[in-house]
Length: 169
Ligand code: SME
Image (cartoon, rainbow, N blue to C red; front, top):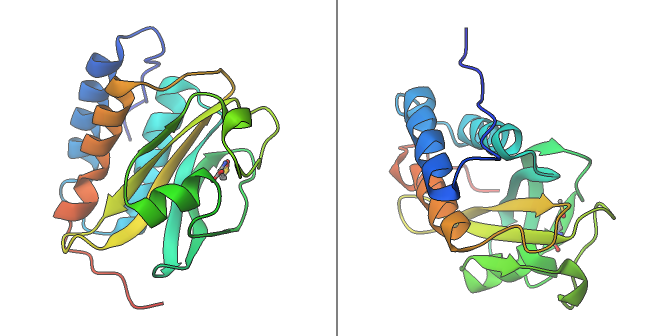
């Protein structure tokens, strides 16, 4: 049986991510499949923190198009162009984007009207090629800070260690 995902909402964020990193190692370190990794990371984060939406947009046309991948939560948009919304901005600029108030972010794409704040983290493969972005939406304003940036970047570093090489789109 798989372990139960702990409720980490009351745990200091740095400690919470350390716990999730340990679980991720147990679950994924013998694996090398990016989709399995995305599904597992989505489930861990979503249930530990009770986010609104937690999941991945995959690069299906390098430099041009993201498509929804494994996620947990309400329905996400299917496709997002590079440069559009928070996800497309993080993908185009290859950097983590933290948005404390989505209503103040020009071009924010509202997949769920309850979303108030958002963080998007780029995911690189072992060659340093952008393969996806991890997107998390919260129903609370300013839900994400420095500890989330550090914690999420350390979780997605798994994708750069895996031997999985995605097939060309
Ligand atoms: N809000 C995102 C779109 C994806 S959904 O929220 C799941 C954006 O602006 O890129």
